[in-house]
Image (cartoon, rainbow, N blue to C red; front, side, top):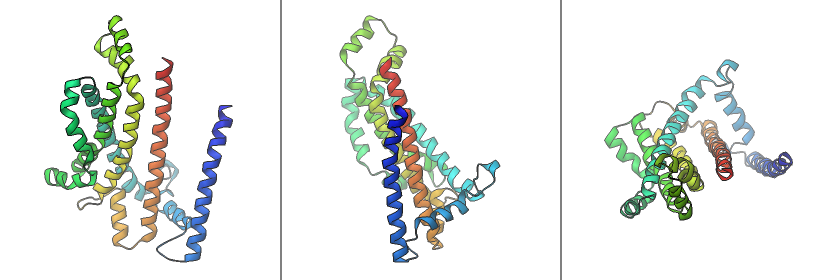
Length: 263
């Protein structure tokens, strides 16, 4: 039954995707512009550029190793640091009324600042390079996790807290068995926002001078050489990465929240 339902849910989405690609293909062929290539040419170029390598390298070419892997490494490191810091600080702020009252204006102000606007500040403080890129990702991606975690920690049913007090749960036990499971939906809402911000900031930080590898560097280099097929391939790659990463995070969310509800 579950497989049948999953199949019924996937088929309409695949049909919409195929129709969208078909419309794109026909429109590009009809227009005949070098600035608007059909998806078949883009896919063929992306395959030759990044995914036509040997089996021992998981079909990745040297260009993919120089472009995709460094970017994924920076984004993953930045997202992981933002998630850990956001959850830890969010729990601390959310469980203290005084801390929440004092910190909330600062948190709301920091959340409202456009993330790309902070990159020049980190360039001045840290200069160009990986530390600046990681700092810009972490500082921008931490706020959605922190704020959502704090709100999730504040919304816990007081009756459950009273039961924990009656059972004399220690602080680590209360955190692991009560606070985190109750706040998981809000935490994952913040993580999804942070994941998209991490991808955006990763690309934006690699567009700046001083970067020698990464997806953003590939995009800038292709634009300077008027290599439009590579520009389109990078854009499609970023869209695919964003979709795959979000899908993976949603799968983890369903699994963890399902376990939390059954315990």
